[in-house]
Image (cartoon, rainbow, N blue to C red; front, side):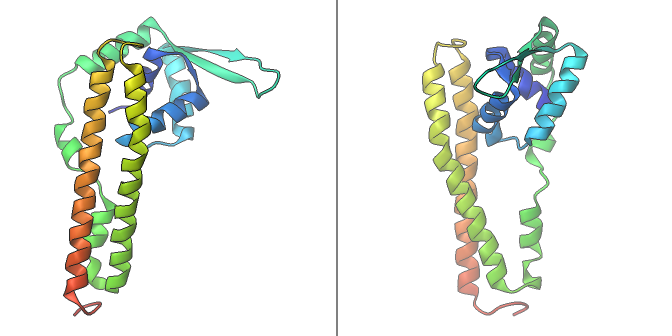
Length: 189
């Protein structure tokens, strides 16, 4: 996925400020795409230069001024073009860079407790993601019929994949923890 296309997708529903985009991105697409606020602002600027969106500076009395971004017809055309393009990233979607698994792979080189700590932390982070999915489920429920009649269905499919992937990660982490705890000993047994 291109971050730019994810942002265009969100702006396709409703104009938003950068702050609102970051919040919405983290509560929806953030489930399967990590980015930073600075990268979002950088891409917003680049997309405005391309004519994919326009922005308007809103002066506020009680709050800091804000810039609201709106998708343009050219931006909508780019989003549809990207969504309609043949899939080219299947392998990269399956094969990922995963520093955790590299650390596990070479885990025999450190004290076993360090690896167990890493696995427990990973498991707990996955549990937090699953807990945070209640917000996503609420947003999907509220969106049914409000924005686009079929959007909630597609949002639900993506969220379900994230839920299942995190449940599988938790199962794997618990199995890995159990295996190492039964192993006994420490580094280079």
